[in-house]
Image (cartoon, helix red, strand yellow):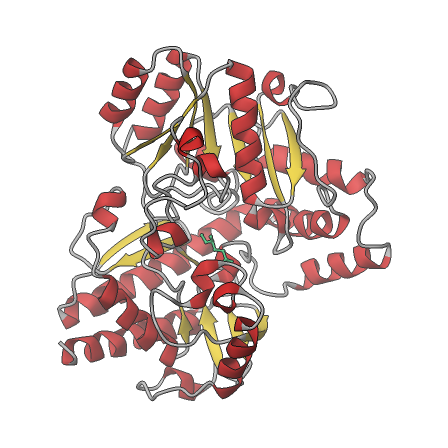
Length: 444
Ligand code: HOZ
């Protein structure tokens, strides 16, 4: 990062980004192809990205930022990691897509299975939404039941049945549920508070023999980062097993992130089905769902559950996934220790700066994902996350961006650290936070 970007805030002018935003608004609602990118919750104009390398992003006006968005999770090895770029280039020379099977699909699947042994069988798709939506369909087919339990503030993509009290952009923009989702569809989705075992017990008691599955982000990322309370995931495992319901871990964000084998490895819980995405495709559109063989083999062509996709198992995505996951497996011990250390240094440094400035800040962190909630805490579920001072978060976000640190533009999202973040980036981030907190205090 250039030295000017860590100095005291000066209003950054982004004429080119502004121009590009105006042009984009002529084509896309809000000028974006995914809502939170519009910066609606934090104000200001979103910088348009021109390129990125390692832990740094450059905007269209030539400004450099330390990046904690990381494409919302996938870029665990940093941007444009040489082995990923090389793999994608090589694959592209052989053509971008065939609509027929390639050896690379089983190659990536074998790597996935090494990290996630619970995924006895799997299917590749192109987005997390497809993965969770298909996992739900499988769970309903397998159990012959209708009801689904999800948790408030968890976001599992934008399939109708899961857009109930959802996190991410839905929480960011305060949308209670999405227009266009039929009551008839939503009525079978029970949204319960996260980290509340009694609420799940009560739901199973009320709907005996009716609940197909429990779907959960085992570490919530889409209400901001929220860790499971001690014993919570185990309770979900026990209750679903007792009721004959399917336990689905949505590890789109946590897979390969909070440990190589995701939250199921970190907390030692084996779900029936797992959804993966983000890191799995190393930045290319790729996701997967999989789990117990007798459930997953209900998929067509073996079984009666239909699911398909023209770009599923896309060779470029497979190549990026093999390069990324392969590297994580090879360097596992070193990488996860380094991520833990870097993320802890950032979290500790910023927490200390907040305390010194008298700013109420709660840091929730699990491995290399974290959120700074602007409130005294604790934040253990969506209701407590929603008590955050979102205006103060917006002020923090703007001040950090001014100083060259790019955080996710919402209080209800997680930030991500990559292996490319260095001690210099950590120091720049802590210095930026210190200046931001001082400015926030001065502004009252
Ligand atoms: N829903 C994503 C974050 N949880 C945002 C994706 C994007 O805007 O790229």
